Image 1: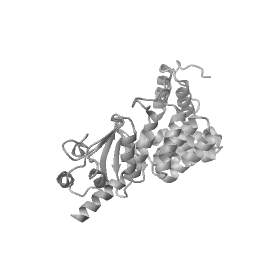
Image 2: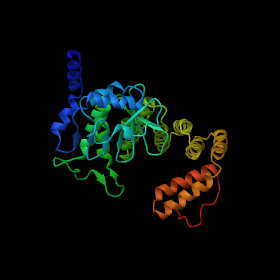
Image 3: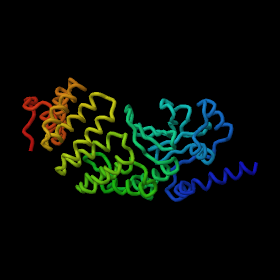
Image 4: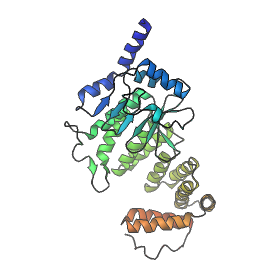
Length: 334
């Protein structure tokens, strides 16, 4: 009994930062449930056929799930009153425990090393969202609370009305706040790099994106954004291997072919004609429909009045099929 009491007291101390945020933030922004009962945890483990990860079991002994920021992220619980049932989450990642879902459709899982991984809906690739459960939780709260005012509603001027996403100055603050708590979160470092690039601070963005690839070398998207940023800075020799690493990290042939088309662009900018030919052949072998796909992308961008996307598709088309005529309805881009 004494040992169980000490364990419970340890769990309470373990989540002090989270408890403090609940008390400090406007009512309703974080809705955490009372602790799960031992029998609920035991039933969940029996259903899974394995013990829950120690960090998540510790959380359940303090809170039986939580609704963070109006269901932006919902952490599952195991009791009848949980905001989402752990049993209702598809456990389709061998060796991992999917424990939370985001309003966007992202799913969060704990791996065997205790890291938190984020999966985009419908994607096989994953990002390292947290170096541990407790750091991920505290960093998530620190990041998301920046978006809200004292009334519990979104603060003014945090969203770009044209792009319909968070303005880069706010996105940068979010990433930096999260990294102070969890410097091992590659996802936050990647977000920092993207925000810096949007702000025109490309040199600093390049360093942040390089740091993200060091923290999570298996995620293709920091490599891709590193390549794009390096190419924009005129550093084709840096961009080329980054695009190649990105292409090697994806399983979908059509996506890999697009990434290889970027590598062709970088090789051409670097004056590496041998690599241009080899990469062009590899891209078309991975996706024989790549040229038609790029032409559709350019046409769709015209329909959407998105000059930047159209210019990008045409540049990739020129890289993989030099001289191939684009659809006649494409405008002359500025």
